[in-house]
Image (cartoon, rainbow, N blue to C red; front, side, top):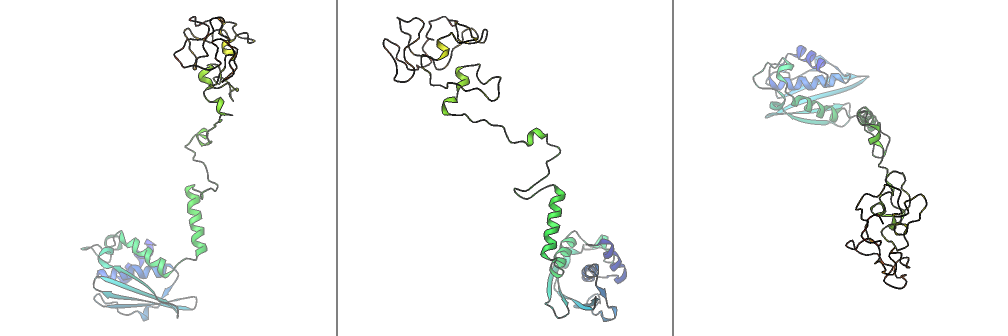
Length: 280
């Protein structure tokens, strides 16, 4: 709604009733779209009239707007040449503030006047679909919002690191899950994490044998990496009394050798295979 145009029309017509104020508002909307009034054909402009008629011309075309009073409603009919008649209805008391000077649009017109103006323009002067799509695209571009799946500008208030997708490295196999619980040095200081042995461990695991290069011969880990009293989960097979070092002859499930070295992992409540010394 062109507020400046509305003020000019009100100053020209000088409405003296709420009905005239609503008609003047809609008349200004027609003029805003390039139509020129033919004043000598105006009719029914009396403050208490039931029907008001306005005639317009534009680029050799003629148009007519007719406003009919029906109780507290005004029904507007608009027709260009012999085309279809466009009809819009509005309530006078919702557009005009009571007890105000009807000749002053800044005081007499309520906020609902903007909604009434939008309804009239969308009905009488609809935009082509291509123009509506262009305006919608421009509005979305101004807000920085792209179509779903389309390109969009990142929010400058968000750090770039938060815009990247999470860097996840799924385990290579099910046996890789939980390997850092078994060997505390695996996966702590390297990306990607090195392959591990998982929770399925036989008595020949390096953890229980020692002699691994660059490790402590007693624990199988780098010197100083195992805190005092450290326990590893799960604990290894039963220690064979004939083999105090606990090196069973099995390599996994169902592959155990003789004696008490069954070749199976055991629950947490068993002691480590080398006895009660956590450093052995």
